[in-house]
Length: 395
Image (tube, rainbow, N blue to C red; front, side, top):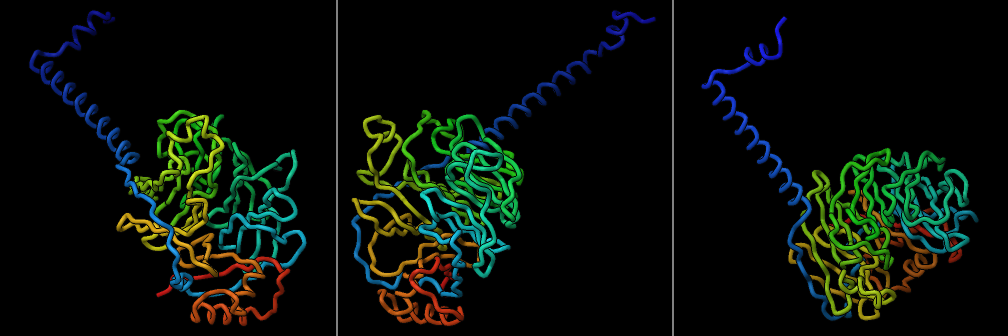
């Protein structure tokens, strides 16, 4: 039987081999350190980039034909059932199965509803209450890309339902996360939390709502106020656009590797910044802020609060310039973009004003609406439900 001393003696290496072994060990350790540092730098480069700062200028009065950026393809009236007669609509998403809408019907609480491709009501998603799968208030909601599941953001947790509105499961991201925005993306979802979560702002989830990646780290202290824009995420042409209301800042992210392409901060004497809103004396102050946006080619367009007014804005991502302007008449308020078509939503009363030439629009836009209205094959009244406007980018 060989004792431990014998094993030790048998395993002892010749001096030359021992030197080579130590050298290889040193090289391997160095390589591992280099790899670790490269990975760390890679992660840092993925998250951090110089922020472009753009100053807001004067609000212009413009008379260009802003709606002419789009061609009207189709008008889809929503069904006039009492259970789905919207007073206001907060979100519209097109799916393979039809349309998902989040809006106010009988109360101030938003209701999530499903419609088919012709605007016919299918069902409500879940229901209000305290039971399993029920909810009290909805911050945001999104169907999956396929339309097979719908996820509701309920302040600090997510609830998932199938395409018929039946409850499937619930998930919490953390004990502190207040989830104010969610949108579907390839492979699952991405959601944004406010500054109540001290770690990251954007969280990528798989189809079962498990976190797969987190980006945009936060170094600021935890803050629970103010409540800025929900529905702060848009996806267009393989990129994710996120509007951080605490900094009045856009982050543009590549969906392939979640790398940060660009960050643009919009600035005025009254825009929200971390320094301003972290002051308790400013807790209830109103700031200049982005209230709605969408992506149109190399532009981010939308609405904002600025100088106590509600002008449109147009951010040019190529030149890093912004303009704010007021135009009277119909201006598309794009709710969704599916890679081919844009989707607006207007009231029946507003549609009738357009087709009857009560709005200030060009002859081109008026004729497109009138043609699409005639193809609906039905008359509508001012008391009818909302109408989905299907658009495409003008050539």
